Amino acid sequence: MELELQLKSDMNLFGSFIFSERKKLGFGKKKFGQLCGGLSETYIRNLEEGKANITLKSLVKLKFGMNSTIATIITRNRRSFSNKTLKLALNEDFDTAKQNFSNRLVAIMKSRKLNSIEFSNYLGMDESATNKYLNDSENPTYLMLLRFAYVLKVEVEDFFDYAGPLPDNTNFKPRYLSP
Image (cartoon, helix red, strand yellow):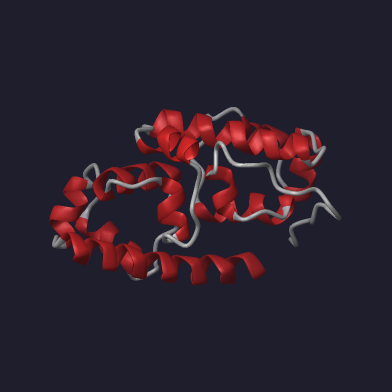
């Protein structure tokens, strides 16, 4: 499936970024993991080798260890964000990150004129499962973020640009995920 290939590519790029940032900080995997909320040395190695499908919770731990934001980590410093977005994102804990993500996902869906039933159908998911993400009660993996982005025709980082403009709706047509 196309998204699994994108996941692998993104995870390899993401892993290289984490590796280079860890080296810039001058830490080994064990010390870096400790700074990142107790992520294990094995998990750090798997991230750096592109073998881990990172979750939002782990992204929050990484951002604290790297003194960064989720959006900056995901984009690997390729995109700038407004000061308001950075201010909102810099000190967010996991619960706040889930809430901010869910709010942004709902805002993008509304701007795309999709309700949760339609969104679930495009995702090929049960509505109750989709609602867990919309109500900030689920910890999304990067693959799930890719799935949401694919259906909504946005970039993953758009979910974390909390104060940024909503994506342009010109020629928007949602895409179904292939089974």
